[in-house]
Length: 354
Ligand code: HEC
Ligand SMILES: [Cu+2]
Image 1 (cartoon, rainbow, N blue to C red):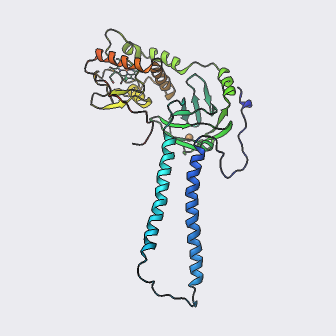
Image 2 (image 1 turned 180 degrees about the horizontal axis):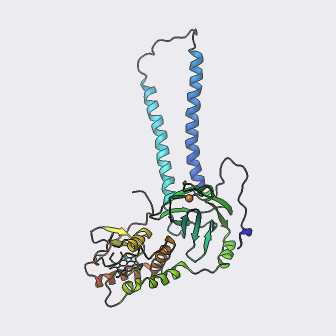
Image 3 (image 1 turned 180 degrees about the vertical axis):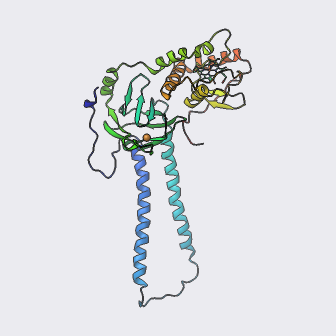
């Protein structure tokens, strides 16, 4: 679908951005509560200032001695009321914070590459876009974001989501659009001379329109381009299953708990895979020798890295969960010291602060 068919962005003057995602209402509710509490106390304090200034002005005939003895009811009240209010802010805010930070498992994924000064989007099915992201209405979308250079920040006010985009690891934003239309996308972190032009839009299409839009483009799926790179770099010479395999199979790796040589486990998420390729010795899988060379020189940019990661992720998608576990048992046969990950693995907790 050419750009001219995209709905226009609402550029009318408004004091508050539209609510166009499933969390927007909740974020605003917390915000208005904070605003109401602040407004109440601001008004209370100013009214009292004016009242006392008038009442105790010079020459007025009022009692100016000290008050009587301590009023315990008053003191307890002015401790407990603010305490209660701040606890409401804390728990309510934490609840919304968790909701914003834990993407639902069924969310569709899109990669975001931030670069001075543009936004690149890569849909796993293959579609690539610049400064424009098309998403379907009513479906949770999870963005895996990384930067090629400076720190940027992905901000869509109408969705009430914002997160930094860093050069060294993936960060996440998720949202579920609730209203068709086009919405502003801003870079919210000063990132150089072109920062103010690092803007774009998110276009929310109805499911049928989205299907049309998807069908109109035929780029190569990321995982397929990734497979070619995987072979081009010779990764398969070590990693493809074979009789003399000295390397862990990558099937079923994504999302699993990887036992480490130094002890403990790490979740095989995008960051772990990225690090395994750039700095293989940083975390060595238990039961294997650290013979994998670094590919830091060969891999030009984060775009290529995303292709490799998508290919490795696709190796896990092709197999149901049970088959994944079997493949890990096979891995054990190849490397008997390799312990199985513990049962009841944690659900993925992308980017939650430690
Ligand atoms: C010389 C053989 C060799 C080559 C070539 C090689 N690897 Fe590896 N790779 C290993 C070994 C051995 C390990 C396990 C030890 C470790 O964690 O470093 C490993 C670990 C990994 C892991 C972590 C797997 C896990 O279960 O923890 C990933 C991901 C990975 N390699 C991806 C790649 C990619 C992508 C390439 C190509 C760009 C590649 N490897 C090329 C030998 C190799
Ligand atoms: Cu920027």
